Image 1 (cartoon, one colour):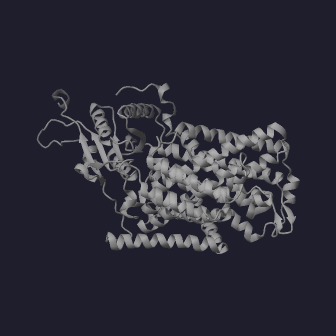
Image 2: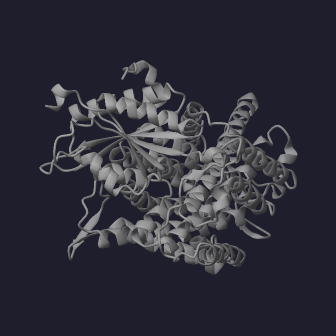
Image 3: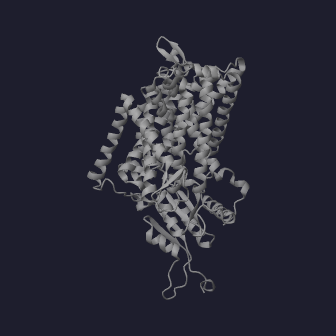
Length: 635
């Protein structure tokens, strides 16, 4: 295979930890532009403390997602963890809660775009224009994703870097110009401003700051080395977001302190624009109150407004993509009706899922134009999804205690033969209690959220029992899509295990030809077999370097045929089981494996042990590409 020049790789190593971090931060970091105002409306002067507590809960959740995603590197996050730990019913509950998260993410991100663009036209700050423009943005994004216009990955990474730098700059300016510990302490009257009920409700609402943690799980199928890259990327996101939320709320409350008025204690940070507040554009509120004046202020307002609107637009688009992806995955596991995984005959995209969930449902959520409602609805779905993720990880540690893990998050306590994950236990208790707080204190959110769950389980039960006549708990994969004309099979994901051989080249070319359609993908996998004398996480620099060069060459060969390719380095004791597990985890429809065919000696196996294992144990289709080894080699 032709060697691809290093200088040509550039951003193509987006499957490493730095690019995973940049992509995820572009989604998670966008929440600062609305989470500050939504949280301050409840937490008032204790907003910095609330974000501190939410950050600790998020750290535990990040550890759970890191271990779970490395263990099962497939799209789905908590739904995937629940499937392996319990059954399809629990998995559906987690996936349906995730769907609610994506819908609210789309609605709230689109809703705040016009608020930051109001620097150019004031009416965009208020109803009905913010709702009208937000709905138009959702319609536009759904249309774009149905047509299938690809995201500009380089632009997303660049904007994520600029976004983090801008937030850090605001923190530095705030500490230099306006930060005041005296104002922060004067902002708080315990039990009154805020009340204890508002304080406890603010904690799950503040978790909206971590919108998008599922992003890394959804990108795990494309991670170069999941056992290293995913935990590192999640830690980087957690630290970066925590650093901003540890500091910026203190700056915001110094600039926009709590005051006592006719309606009680309030802060302009949590008031709507018609009352002179900045709940709809909290970061612009900070900029306006830094003490900067003149042209510098005007320039900074325009810069922050345009940047925030752009980041939120991208976050809304990520929500649209996430909603369609989780819908397709749920339909593939027979959790939702078949039409939700059918592709548009021309654009090859799941158009029905995009229209119904990413479009119609998000617009319905947006119509009231209430940021408090959107915030608590997100908390309802997110806390439920996170709780299921934590409980699933604990169950996996107990039920599969003897499995050797490539990555094990910490801290743990060894008791009765089980490594109990303290982070998952404490995180699950925290997110479960936070979910109960939302359910108990917010009647509108309670009935809307429980109604959403009830609707989902009714559809799931009817579809599984009446239409498919399948057990509710059984895991059943839908077959690969078959198109009518000529019964051509549509392979959306093809796995190709690679080694350095001519047969591997033939397998890669065959896979590229089968992929054909522009939205299909070839997943190139190389298994680094670790001997039993070493831990799975052992550092093997020479072997890793050779493996990465092989993966780069294989990707270059596939992409030369105009087909999208991703690569993965898998650590395992044996190649055969690892190949099958990877294909199952990513939901592939086909395995194409290259193998030499030895001379037909009596009792000699036709193929090697790896190929035989794949053919025998793979639940997906498998094709072997190869030829007879020359007589000299066979001998």
